[in-house]
Structure formats: structure tokens, C-alpha cells
Length: 301
Image (tube, rainbow, N blue to C red; front, side):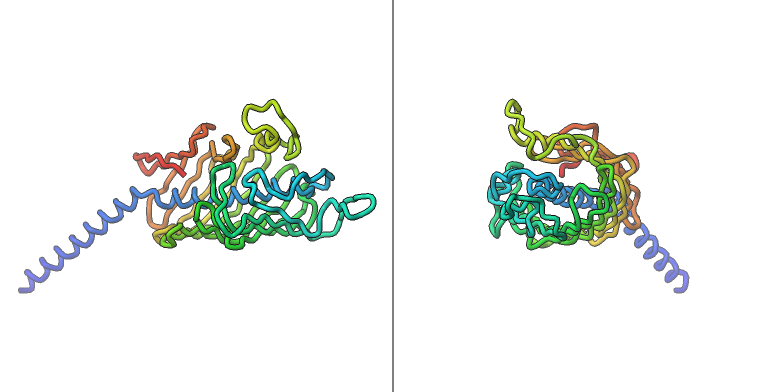
């Protein structure tokens, strides 16, 4: 009886270990953490793009320009920008730069989905408080989101950007992204350095009527950024992960849409093998390749 019991216990232990090994093998093949990290990365990069362009349009660089319209037409004609207090005060005689800070920039897409020129549907508000002029070293931009959605994904959290000078910002994000059905949620924190590497000499107001793409918007569509840093989060399955950019991410516009076209991220989910995420070689295809051990998987974000 004692021998039989020992054999039974041994079989049970072997079965449990085998099942655990099979489960871990299956988990090791998953690309969930890589996909969720890319989703969060893209979501908060998109927010940074809106803030930059709206700040430029509203003269937050301290260079007075005439504002053509109160509608934010780059991403959507139904998004309205307000800046309080205004940067270029036309109520003064003569009109002059208003040096009162902080200033609050609000990009309001409304309460119903509105489709922009980049074919993304947005609603809700992006609210950013500027401690100084956007292009001045030391300026802090503190951003919050009010019921903000992109393609029905609910994006929440805070984003703090500090102007480090030399076209570079230190950025910290503490946020989460929830799927349209509300069943999946990604928590994401990141510490990044974002450097403007191309397109610095043009802006929202640079006109190029001979453009083959987007006419008057070429001054912002030629912008390219390089991103370095680390992130951590919890994926949709509740598994923690760590991420580190090992080759700087290149973010550029592909038509109207900003994409990550180059760079490498190493992602390490809790208790699983290292994932290496490669965004390619400057091709506009919104894809990345996840390598786990000797297997590779192509994904689209």
C-alpha cells in the first residue's frame, strides 16, 4: 500500500509538472505583452502629437501669428482648441504677447465620435497646462484626459513633459487603455526622452501649395521624433511586464498618420521569455515583428 501510494503521488506530481510546462510553453508563444505595449505607446504618442500641433497653432512658442479658425482642422474639423489666457491677445491695443502663465490648452473633440483626417474617431478632451512657452527650456506641460477615446478605446491617465532644450522633452506617462467592449485593460507607465530630429524649421503655418499630399500641413507632416527610455505595465491578461527601448524608436508621419517606422524594444513579461520587438526599417506599414526564442510573429498595431 505504501509503495502504491508513493507511485500515485509521483504520477500526480509528474502530471502537474507536465501540465505546468505545457502551459508555460504556450504562454511563451504569446505576443500579448508586446501588442499591449505597442498599443499604449501609440495611444500616448498620438496625444503628444495633438498637443504639439495645437500649441503651435495657438502661438505657445511665443511667435505671434494670426489664428485662422477656432477649429482644429489637422486631425478633425470638429475638434475645437481653447487657450486660457490666450498667448497672442488681440483684445489689447495694439495686439501683444500675453506673458501670463500658466496657460491651459484644451483640445475638445466633443461628446460624439468625430473622424479626423487620419481616419481615427475621437471624442473627449485633452487638457494641458503649460508653465511657460512651449519652446523654452524648463517649461513643464502637465496633461490630463477627460473621457478621451480613440476608435472607442478609452485612454486615461496623466502625461508630464519637461522641455530639456535642444528640441528634447523628458516625458512621464501613468495611464491605461481599455478596449471598446470594456473587457480588456492595459496599465502602462513610461519614462521617455523624445527628441525632435527632423522638421524643426517648418511649422503649422508653413505653406506648401505645391504639395502632393496635404497642401498647407506639410510644415507639421515632415516632423520626425526619436524616442528612448523604459516602460512597465500590466497586460490585458493581468501579467506584469517590463520594456526597454534598445534601438531608438523613429516616429514619423505616413500621410496623415504618425507611425513608429524603426526601432527595437525588449519586453520581459513576468516569468516568461524575453520578447524582442522590431519595428522595421522606415517602412510605413504599421507592423512589427516579435521574436521569442527562435520563433518570430508579425503583428499590426
